[in-house]
Every structure is written in structure tokens, then in C-alpha cells.
Length: 287
Image (cartoon, rainbow, N blue to C red; front, side, top):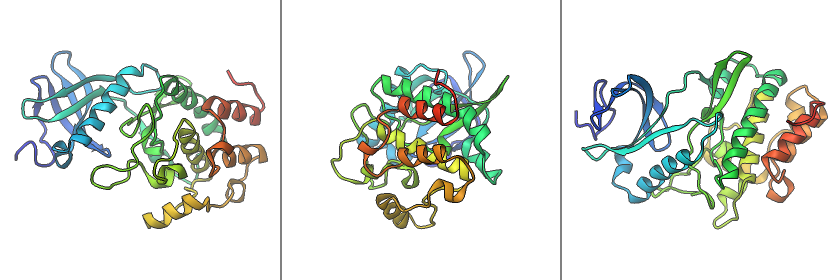
């Protein structure tokens, strides 16, 4: 099989160094593989730009941007970049740490909901990772359970952020060159659907709010099998209040409601402010 036409086979070696071992999954722009770095014998993750995007200059720039963003973000809560390269056959790829654990999506699949105790343990590390990104002027732009991996540690699982492919320093791409949304509608802030809207860190405030809603209730607030209806629900703020679908304090429900406000000005101004409100709702001071 031509290495540029579909999934690559185990044993394929990129740039004379990275031996692909097995597919791990798919991202918005590329296929992800477990691989072995032959120079260090270390296992790593390799994301390869999809063949249908490889000839698209805009997509290649977006893919390289993810590498540049990850290189600038050195934080324990963000999966680190090892290399951004181009193979002899023209394959564009990213090499990152191989993070072993299950995603929040996989944890949610265990049902019925994660609950307040586990969520409470993850909010701090998630907020710290996002604050580190925002301090570099980077908005993640695609926060969702699939892009948070839970790594087992001595006090319990610790969340780490994945996939900065939709991020940008001065805003976000709403559409790819093929007309696809650069993000997942059920987690995207309403302003992402408005051409030329001003975008800032409050996009991530909204995305984290949706994740919190889902962790605490076991359901996505805009759950619907039709993408068009999801977008209309997001744009209208059409969802049941969190305390109508989960038993929890009014303070926590109000916090999530504020994070998910239609107007960015009505949300928390920063992730730090959201974290402070969370700690207050939980009866403690933020670190």
C-alpha cells in the first residue's frame, strides 16, 4: 500500500527514526499511532497529517501551528511535543509524549456520571493547564472529553490536555478549507459560529463549562444526533439547567451556567476566575 494513501502499516519507519507500532486513533487533521523512537527506544505518539489534507497549504499550516504551539507550551498538564517533521515521502508529522490512560470520554462511557468528587479532583489541574496556555496567548479552542486524558498517579488520576490543532494565538479558525468546522459543535462557544466575531480566552471558559456540565450530569447539554440542530441549540443556549438534571448545590449549578452564557461578557473573564468560583462553591480557597 502507498504510505500516502490511507492507514500506514506497522513497521513503517518515518524519517529513519520512528517505527510505527499500532494505530491509536484519529484526530481532526490526522491519524495517530503508537511508535518507537529507534534512537532512544522510547515509545512515543505520532500524528500524521491525513492524505486528503497534505496537499492543502492551509491545512499544512494549521498542522504545523499545532506543533509550534505545543513546543511553546511546557507544562505538566499539557502533552509535550518532541518533534515536528517531514518524512522523505512528504508526510508531515508530529511526535509527542505517549500518554497512557483513558480519556474523559472513555470515563464518561462507564456512566452514569462522574460526579462531584472526581470532578473536583480534576478541575484544578485542568484550570492550571489552560491558564498556562492562555499566559502564552494561546486559546485551546477544542475543549471536549476526547481531548483530556486521565493519567494514573499516586493520589488518583490527573488530567492532561491533548490536541491543540484548533488553537491559535490571535483567534481560532472557524472553518477548514474543506468547509468542515474546526471543533466539535456541542462544545463550541456560540461566537465561534459568527463570522468575524472577537474571540478570546472565554471560548475556553465556555468549553470547560460544557465539560463540567457533562461530568456532573452524565449527559451533554446539547445532545442531539443532528449537527445542524446541535448548532442551533448552542446558538440559542437551549439546554436544561444543570440542577434540573443532576443533584448538586445551587452554587455549582450557577457556576456552570455562568461559564456557558451566550454572551462572552457574561461569562467568567478568565479560567483563573472560574477556578476561584469553583473553589468558593466547594468551600475552600483557590491555590
